[in-house]
Structure formats: C-alpha cells, structure tokens
Amino acid sequence: MPLPNAKDDRGQLGAVIAVVLGVVVLFAFVGVAVLIASLRSSSGDSKPDIYVSIGDSVAAGSGASDAKATSFPALLAAREEVSLRDVAVAGGTTQDVIDDQLGKALVSIQTGRVAFVTISAGGNDLATLIPNAACVEEPLPASCPLDETLARVETNLDQILSYIRDANRRVPIVLLAYPNFFSGTGHAWEAPAGRVLPELAAVIRSVAARYDGVAVADAAPAFEGRGGELTHVLDQAFDPHPNDAGHRVIADVFSAALEEVR
Image (cartoon, rainbow, N blue to C red; front, side, top):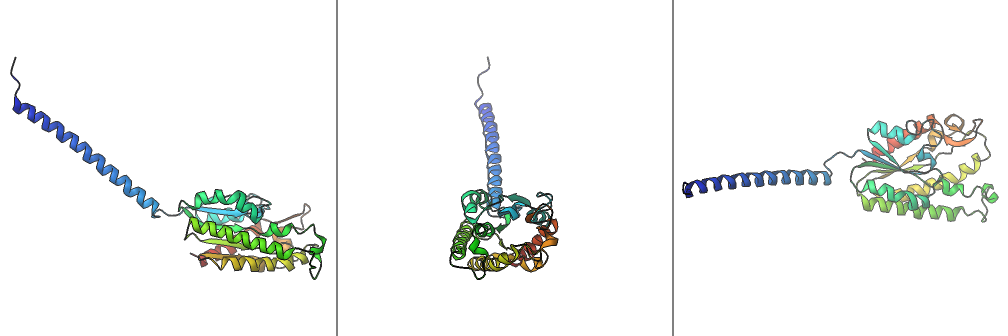
C-alpha cells in the first residue's frame, strides 16, 4: 500500500478550502444584494401604487351603476393607474371611520406604498339630525344640536388626519366638501341641506388647514342646481346619492385637489 503523500493531502485540502470560501463569498454577495434591495424598498424608492379610500356611502360607491368601475374612487384609481383599497362603508360616520376603518387603512398607509388617500366623512354625522324636526326650521332653534354635531365632526376628523400623518408624513390626503345632492330638485331636504352643508364644509377646511399635504375637494359648485341631473334624488326609486355622472364630477374635483398637494 502506498504511503500517504503529505503534499497531495495539502493540495486536496487547499482545493476544498477554496471551494468553501467561494461558496461563502457567493452567499455574502447574495445577502448584500438582498439587503440593499430591502433597504431601497423600505426607503420608498419603489413607486407608490395604492390608493386608499375612507369614509361613507359616497366613498363606498353608492349610487354608481358599478361601484368597482364607475364610482369616484374607481375612476380616480383608473386615472392614476393605482390599485384601489376602499375601506369605506355605507352609513359610516366620522366615529365609524375611527372605530372600524382607520385600522385597516393604516395597515396600507404605513407601508409607504400608498400614493394618496381620500376621505368622505361627516355627511352621515349631519344625517343623524334629520329625525329632529327642529333641524329643518329657519332659523335653527337651540333644540337642534347642529353646533355639537359639527364640533364632534371637527374632533374626529382631526384625530383621523393625525393618525394618518403619524403613519405617513408625506402621503397626499384629500377630503370631500359635500355638495348639496338635493340642489335644484325641489325636494323637502334641499333648503335644510343648503343651510348646514356650508357649515360642515367650513369645519372640513379648518381641519385640513392644520396639516401639510392635505387639500379639500369642493364639489358644491359643480352640483349647484344640478341635483336632478347628477343624483338619483328624482328617480322613481329615490336615492340621495350621485349617479355615474355625479361620481364622475366628484372624481374630477378630487383630481384637481390632488394636484394641489403633490
């Protein structure tokens, strides 16, 4: 049997070590590449590609023939070429947004992938006053708790914007200043809505002005005298929501407002 050759053993050991070192270096390069990619993603180098819609029935697409295609959030998402994350729920008040929607929205907003956020909230807070007969009188008597309701909306909207800003300092946010959906229809609610909605709009603008990167989409002028054309108020089946044309108008004012905060 031939005696072991120390020189050959050292050569084989060197080859093994070279292979092992090569593998280690390869994995090191792969690890660095993955780390860099991760850091780039987390630093916001990837283009935001999500739109978050928060709020009530208008934001949920009520009145549209196809909420997934002709509602204002769907139209905005298509125009901006982003994916829609709509957490809005019909009937939602500002408190409902805080309790039920905000957590879901923040999951997306915190990722840094959200291109913009829209909020349609406050209208249903005022709608709670409808059963109160005093709230349709002119001038409004003290028995109509409009001031208290507006104060609650202000507090809640401020809290909503504060949470969003804490989650993402730069994402553009646009709030809806509600139009009078009854304008020009002669409906019994046309005049009461015309009295209180400007006050709600003033609250919404006041809260928006407290934060950078927040704008207000004022749809009221576009709906003035056009409720019969842009809503289902005069339809045989009464529905106080925008139709497809109305959702298109709301999408237009959101697009214009969005340009202000980009």
